[in-house]
Length: 220
View 1 (cartoon, helix red, strand yellow):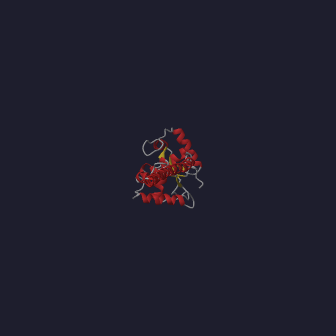
View 2 (view 1 turned 90 degrees about the vertical axis):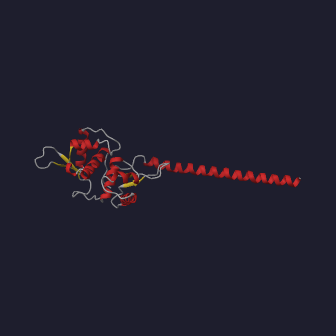
View 3 (view 1 turned 90 degrees about the horizontal axis):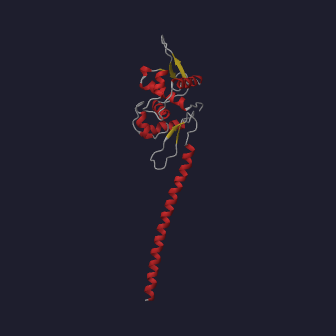
């Protein structure tokens, strides 16, 4: 997979995809609208406080990567921007609508469980249930031109594994999670072993008491 985005680039791309879907009448976005979208306090993790100069610099980087283009429009004096990231005539990267909604949410919020994605991505595309999300995630993880997502090791005490996008390279914290998983399994195995030893010791004590009682009866 050739695409690799910085955190700010990922936020800009995700905001352009999101606004194209949710507010098509206001898309493409001006620099001011794009900055506001990047700093939006809802549906974002982390919440950022980027200034227009930083957003413009990020857009310029994406333009050089052919992932964003400027769209002036007839008679418009304000530059507006649209993504060329996927599902456009300018590139080969294509996603189904469910996949696109999930990718957008992962870019906006970072690693999430299928249940979280079902709840959050449904504002971009109606997802019927978690099984539909899991099917889309599996497709994104197995794509021949990918993978585009990865399942992270399940955190101790959590019921579901989280998924992360791979458009920014290796997932931060993934190696740490991999190291934590064997440690958690080791702790569980030790606890089970200690419980079994305690059970055997109790059985042994009961047998010893029974034998001692039998010997005393024989002596009597």
